[in-house]
Image (cartoon, rainbow, N blue to C red; front, side, top):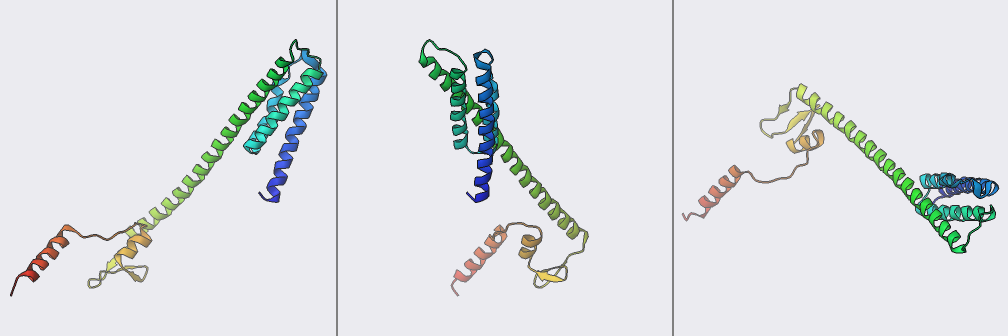
Length: 194
């Protein structure tokens, strides 16, 4: 990770933590009368949109602890402290699930954009190739009767070069049935004793 990435990561985490602190303070001031739980989703969404999974987990832990602190300091009394721990765990879980869902959404959007860019690139290549083929179709092509080379833009090339370079066709060599028959006949003729 380079210095710019680290600085951007720190800025986003600072914004997220600041928002969490403001929400926690507001939650503390309002006490247990008003539920501000939904606002804890804002900093986790910010973290999830811009940062990594590990940062989401850290932000969810801090958010749950901030909520728990504000809840207990705001005057909410529990008959059993285990309920308070349970509520912190539920808060952490909900923040983590939301954060991971936002992260998945962001990753999906990035992947779709990358696929769209690749599709646009392919479309441009296709248009260029189509234009080149149409240009070649509109011209009269000359093939040498002896060497079977083709002239394209005053340059003589083999048919294979033409197909590969101008039509972008991948080629391989094989043997036609006629050539096999001819080769078999030649071999048969060469085998016969004189």
